[in-house]
Image 1 (cartoon, rainbow, N blue to C red):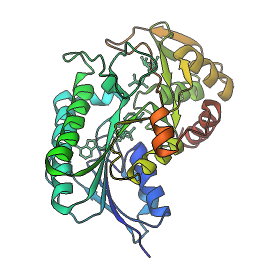
Image 2: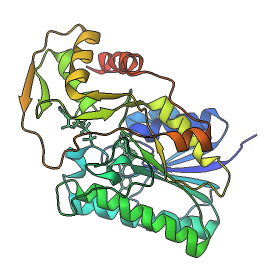
Image 3: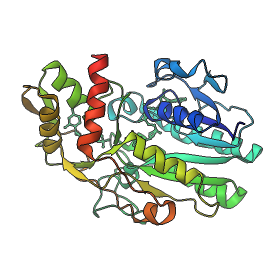
Length: 312
Ligand code: NAD
Ligand code: UDP
């Protein structure tokens, strides 16, 4: 028996495709909506034979109507080179996408989850980041289309909840990686692995001392689904990420070790407003969701490297 009918926006992307797969596996009916800006049909082609899966080309900046019980709103390019390619469109996707999905949730009385981001903290001045930190974002910098778009989306979510009693959930996702990342999307984990496997130079931006905390996709989705299923009065925002913190230099060295590559490391200029450090405080997720990550970086990287070996 089908448990729930669920809409996943951005469902043909990296996280979205894994989420669709997992929700189907758990016995749900899934409608995947995507405009294929950074996602691809290829990511969900293996699900098309499943009678409980439906794929629809649609842009979330346009209204959409469907009857579902839950909405996961993931539509938005996530890699800096993609979200900076058309910054106005990035803002529209976050803001109009949120308005359209919240309007839909209100009308059909669905529960709606927003994929927010650690970027709402900008280049953080407190470390590790807790949910009560308001952030340090440059509103006119190159990352602002993404950061501010996601911040407004949170504002919309909270106000639809307060004003219209829409049942919402906000997850702040920290850098997540795994199989099905786009090989050219420019994010650091995919860049380093692809470069190492091809024997090309490993490109470190800046001196490599900046840090990130990397979460494996399966762990992240576990936290996301737990949040959606949490009690109605827990709405977040809640950090979900792996607190293990690494410099980009350490990441490069680990990728070189695991791939056995002889690529050399080169240093390129650091992009403007690149956050110097990032690490989630996950106390709230532990307490409210009973969640913590299980897959250490080395193990997750091995699985990701195996994926890239099959496509390169
Ligand atoms: P992704 O780029 O692989 O996926 C985004 C998906 O959204 C793509 O399939 C893309 O085609 C689709 N999309 C973009 N604009 C759209 C539009 N206007 N209408 C419909 N579909 C649209 O990125 P991802 O890593 O899978 O990220 C998914 C979500 O999670 C994003 O909202 C992102 O901001 C958030 N997030 C991801 C990370 C991460 O580390 N992966 C971190 C923080 C937040
Ligand atoms: N980075 C790097 N080399 C690359 C790609 C990224 O050194 O080839 C750095 C980037 O400057 C940033 C970190 O890796 O400091 C994470 O970058 P990513 O684009 O993956 O995510 P975000 O900056 O959005 O956290």
